Picture (cartoon, one colour):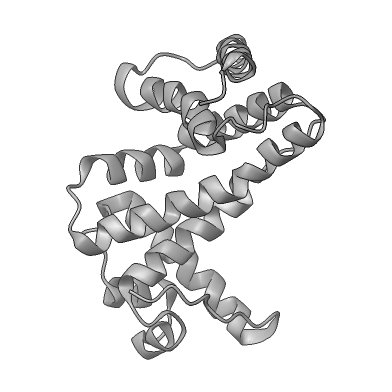
Length: 198
């Protein structure tokens, strides 16, 4: 699967086609999961020719990945509150808001329930790499403010904060309210500050 970025043209018919196709892709992912999605179904729902999709995205996996990245960029933009604690809480609120919406809930459960084939596994990996890389700017700002020791691994810290949220959303179905987000943010930040160099 190619990792070359998709070329985008601002405005006009190309932008409308892109918007229709990515929206249709996300809807179909929510309905039936990544394994059953086909280019033909996406084209029919978006009202475009299959050749238009193949010309822009080349593969089904690239289309899924690009659509998911675009959706997450819109709904899960990295916050900048002025503190690591505040950034984590704000990020948590975005994750909960998306994860409890009808579309977000269906997408999360769809990806969690389907067994990965090789293409889906690569798509999942690239999606999370994109999300984690984007969120690492929070860690860079925290280091610049002196809130986070330089030796603390950004990915591990993000996973420690995000994992309890997904655990509740996916497994226990317990509520994830502001108080809970504040508590896990405090634990994450305190743990990072106390982590000795290796």
